[in-house]
Image (cartoon, rainbow, N blue to C red):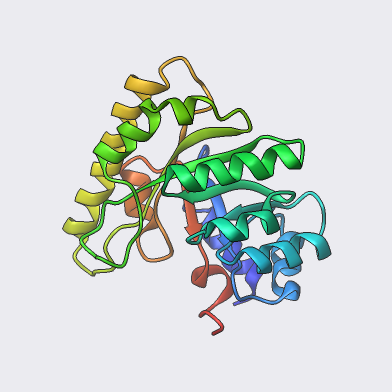
Length: 222
């Protein structure tokens, strides 16, 4: 199957209103161009310098999403290019993004990453930390970021019940956060959850954005 065919068959399973992020991390530029020529415009990277290199080399109407864990000292590489940062898991990171956005005379949309899995290796804020961040004066003083929603990663397991519960949990956190902090803000509308193995379950439970790599591009290149 070609990348174009893979894309077409995945898009056929994704309802209107759900954004497909094609996860292009580790993939060569030629593979991204193949997906681009098949109509895909949103791509996800998990390393800051790789995103920067691809953004500088590839068509300018591509939307680049940073989906991997982001260190504060790497924000400068992506600040001019990134359309959405999915993986914001601390106030200090948010402050750095705000600073770099200001230097680039732009506002950067972000998602706050919530910890919903049963795995220690996953990053993210719990509900108390999320509330504390959004209630803080420091957060309110940030002028060059916009929080557009939440992101979460389910446990890496074949147990569909576990995964469903975690996705439902993120949907509940989103609804509570919307009600308590963003009730009047239409742009707070994104729940990024679901990957190649579980995206249909994620959509069933309320995902508005899915991150799919191997089902489009084939197995990862390490």
